[in-house]
Image 1 (cartoon, helix red, strand yellow):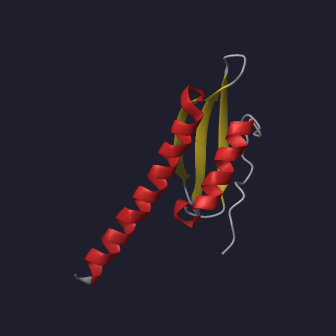
Image 2 (cartoon, helix red, strand yellow):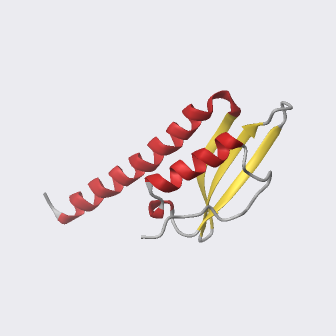
Length: 102
């Protein structure tokens, strides 16, 4: 396998890892989660989430990442899922998502 093919395979695996976590979060939250995606604005990266709240309204949540999405680990996604399940988020939040070091 050539070097470029190895790089492309590694990049594809990384994309699949992050997509699968977003799908897992959406599935775990069920109908409460109406949208979840990685978003890039300039050199900044975010996870945007739309949630249906207890009163039937929409909460729009934005977590700023400290780097590109490929810096996130399973622990980071699990932490995000736990916060969302517990409703521990601020509407319109742009607070940084706590990213695991190392």
